[in-house]
Length: 412
Image 1 (tube, rainbow, N blue to C red):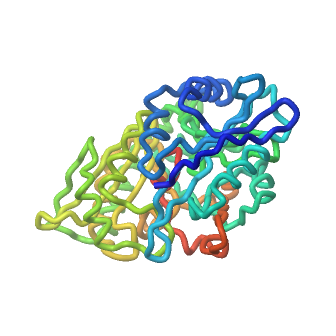
Image 2: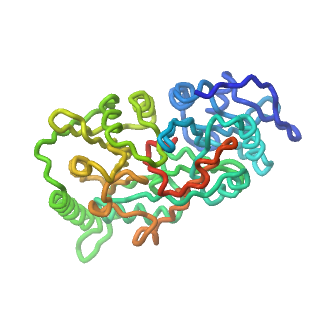
Image 3: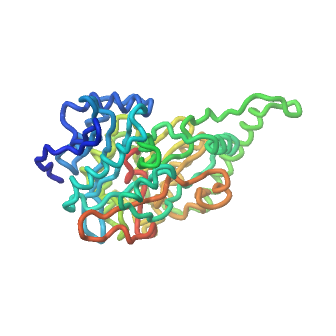
């Protein structure tokens, strides 16, 4: 828990002042959020993300105001991370925003400098986030270091619909649930959703009806989708190890204690969020998301789990257990096949970072390599990090030293 220090100091430039968030700022924050992101978020979401966050005892938001009106916010998402076998608190910058009428006035820099001074005593231990190309310079200017690009993996279930959606993403940046940090000062902002799938308007799986040799594109789409689904299921079963003693449970409410038990069977050495029962209970209460947990048991003992989030015509694999995906692979692979079969009618399935064992075996392709790299630009998944205080533990790492899934990200 990070204590809130008593401080009434503000940073002033012309007619703006920068200060710590106060309890009566919530309505103003939500109003600015709606203005900047054109996305309605209510008090339940704010309370879950900030008030009820178990890793800080205050709301870690810095605000910029003018004439007693909040015009900018620099927010942080506290997480308990495991680093070298120890737990440390990290802040993930998120929901950074500046009102359109007050941009290009250095407000992001002022808020960031205030935050760095405010938390400069080494609590939190470090910051990490995924800025887009426009906002990356602002982070680097304030001491963040580039760690590397973390891939997103795609498995096309319906190849025609999936290809159309992914190609469309080249024309505009989208993700329907991206809590973007890119709406601050241009060149000065922070991260767009690290886990963007490139699909904010997931299509319905149908293409326009046009005659093609007496048929329609939609009829071709249906035929390809059916053939693809059948071939996927057959192939998945052929490459999956046999696990006759394993049973699979489906949970709408996360079995938090069982999830922690599976996590503790094989904790990775890499940097990642510390997964406790309390973490799962809080993390999966995001009121803007739907989550389904699939738990595998072997002779009654929980041995593997997958957490997914269905989104319109596609599905996100949010987390997998064990987190050390190079161990205990058989139960996890069998569980993956069962989940893929249940969602075989979706256009595609995504997984972020180190979520799956042997992703290529199950036709998950990374957007950092061909063929997807020619259609999708993974620039919003460049991991940056910054140590706080004198200890240097994060800035010298590489992506190989991290084991991230969507559950490590603020927007999931």
